[in-house]
Image (cartoon, rainbow, N blue to C red; front, side, top):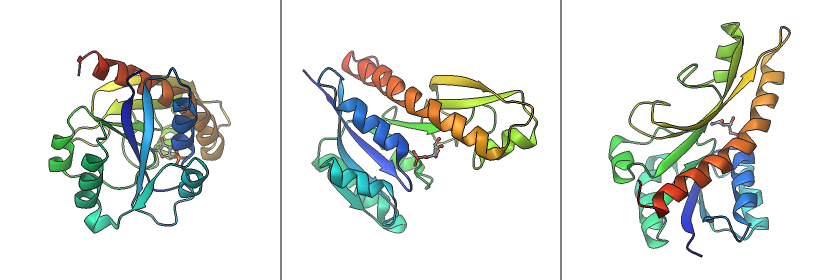
Length: 190
Ligand code: GRF
């Protein structure tokens, strides 16, 4: 079975990375996780790559894109998943990977783009927020939406409780969005 070779970029905890790795262990899933790249050598997520025997590399922020591009091509990577990757990619890098970079964001886009999306939702006293997987384009959190899940806020919701609720749903949403995306690639739709 043809599997789409996928890389994940992380900067921190790596819980979404972990859910993608676990999903891809299924022989019938149409993607494989072949590479983890980080711009943070202290990222907790790196510990998980060792236990899963997946190659990981740390590249300093300044050199990240050049070195990443080299290894992505060497390993024949076809798709990049951003999972808590705290660096804005350049227009040039994004153009090279048009429709081949996806990201997960902790809000129901287009609401609450950018940093601290959960805090933004609490401060706005929003009735709902959620999580979204989208294609990455030059506009931050503005690319085409692949899949999203709405999450209602309780009256006494705080940042911590909302973050927890959203993260739980992210771990379900991201694998589903990955499957949709790789199936489109396999069917030459994107
Ligand atoms: C998630 O909330 C994701 O939506 C955001 O950063 C967080 C990463 O968490 N982009 P983790 O590193 O996957 O645990």
